Amino acid sequence: MELNAFIIFFAAIFTSNILLTNFLGMCSFLSVSKEIESSIGLGMAVTFVMTVTSAINYVVYHFILVPLDIIYLQYIIFIIVIAAFVQLTEMVLERFSPLLYYSLGIFLPLITVNCAILGVSLFMIIRDYSFLQAVAYGAGSGLGWLLAILILAGIRKKIKDKYVPTGLVGAGLSLIITGIMALAFVGFSGIVVIQ
Amino acid sequence: MILKQKMMNKVLYALIPIILFAIFLYGWRILMVIFISNIFAFLTEYLFIRKKKFGKVSMAAFVTGTLLALTLPPTIPFWMVAVGSIVAISFGKMVFGGFGMNVFNPAIVGRTFIYISFPNAMTMQWLQPLTKFPAGFAVWQNTSLVTTATPMIEYNNSAKLTELTQLFSGTISGSIGETSAILILLVGIYLVITKTAKWQPMLSLLISFSLFTSIFYGANPLQFIFSGGLMFGTIFMITDPVSMPKNKIAIWIYGLLVGFLTVFIRKFSLFTEGFMFALLLGNIFMPIIEFGLNQMKVKKSG
Image (tube, rainbow over all chains, first blue to last red):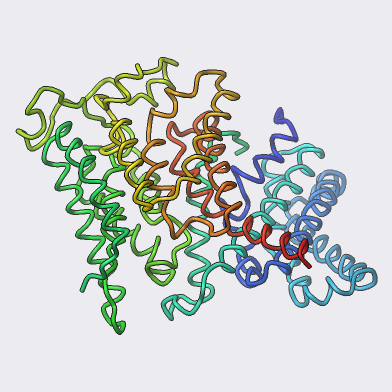
């Protein structure tokens, strides 16, 4: 509880990056990273949804689930909250920014089942964060996810796929690159510890 | 069977004095380490390209093998050398399509892999170098396991810096090829003069490293530059022409970024030596930064 919210924010981006240390949210990470523009869009959408849902879920958990003594329902409730919020975001986006809406296409509804978002909500409960810490953790994890997908998109842009061994084209090579990225991020470990 | 590459040959020639000096310090076992690393580098690359038309093993495989071997501690078990070499060539280079296509520096990928997998063998045992002639030329392996740590570890433990003269001559414990600053500097000058390596990344790296060392440590950066693997990395690792960005401004940013990250990791993280991670991080961040730079250029001109 004594951790500064800013430290948690920083750690969630670099030392405990939700994607590179917990390997959550891999599916959209692998499929959207082909294009840099759409990966930025999805990354920002994930950051937004993560920040807001971690706040909502915090309130729901501590002011509804705990008083009613139905903590065992947390998985279902969290998923419902996330799904409802993504639906809402979708409608707002469609109304105000149709361009982003169509470029994201199927991936926007897919955020609902992005395990990183449920993961963040569950981690903040397990680690017993305060409200401010939970929001900082959500925002930091979202930005960390955005950073990771941006890096992968940049690297995939640089690689010329035609020389890659046939069996590795696409997801195979992306997974190997993600592994090497995770290796490099180990270098940050020990700067701040939140786990 | 082997593709000839003049540039890579020059790098290999340049490494000969460093290898000889390493044998002088630690004994003939060093040569075996380098030999094993190269053999496995060759075999791995051969397995990948054997079915391709005109498939030839590039000279660069031997450069990667030798560089990897020189960054390992002298007590490293042979099988770990082989693992590092196989990972370096296969995951660092061949999965991207072979020579010229790799995004990361293969030798650094290999070293990081074994560093994280076998931290004890990579960081705990160092040898006290032999100094009296014929020193290592007369023995198979220098057996004087040290209690004194490498300059970097010693600084982390007791904030005591090693004397500059010792750092220059290389009679300190450390990885196989990284100890003698003066030898590495001379080789670096040779590489720059023969246009084998670019000077821009070296200079930008050293500038940013000195700057951030003075900021974070508040000390004269000279001794920090010559401690640990920084000099070796500056001359041989960051100058790898394939994993380096192509754009001129991007090369400067690359050097500055790696320099900053090296100091940052040395100062704040768990690890005493930051250059390896810093370079790998530089490699993964650069493609997107370079893309951003190009976008900015397009916008300006259009």
